[in-house]
Image 1 (cartoon, one colour):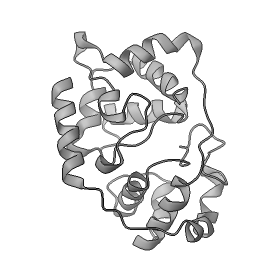
Image 2 (cartoon, rainbow, N blue to C red; image 1 turned 90 degrees about the vertical axis):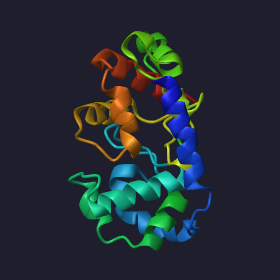
Image 3 (cartoon, rainbow, N blue to C red; image 1 turned 45 degrees about the vertical axis):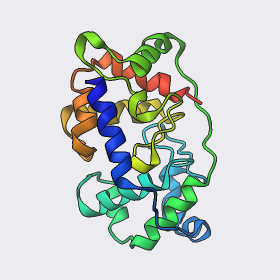
Image 4 (cartoon, rainbow, N blue to C red; image 1 turned 135 degrees about the vertical axis):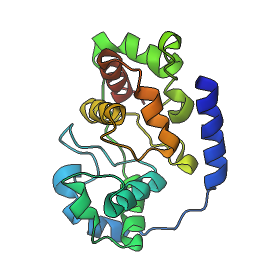
Length: 201
């Protein structure tokens, strides 16, 4: 499973390429006025249930906005917010939020050991792949493949997303990669990984 995941990651990165439409961060800052209530002035959400956007890859931000707008990803709050956005709006918002500095997080000490084990090595007994195969040793992701930065992200948000992928409530992952990885993860493993990642820098 780990070899398969790494191979698919490399192929996706090569297929996607590095060309990205340029966004205007200043225009994105202006457009972000409607985003501030949930995601914070600089993209550092004050509510751990909502993701930090600061420092996220612009390619990933745009992918999510497109998929909220197109109905591929559904959320009662985000879907209607994305509907009126143009492609340029999305480029601009992605440019703005990606240019902001993410506030660091910290991990719950009692979850670090298990979280690090799963993140770095997976669980061979249950065929769970290592998270770092796609998200990198420091959780910075892979922008060419649209694998998000997850380091420093709110643990509560990460835990919910992992459980949503596991249940199928979220299904906008390429080639079911996330759904396949988390299908065999326990609640304890998911919580531990989420906490560990929250403290990654």
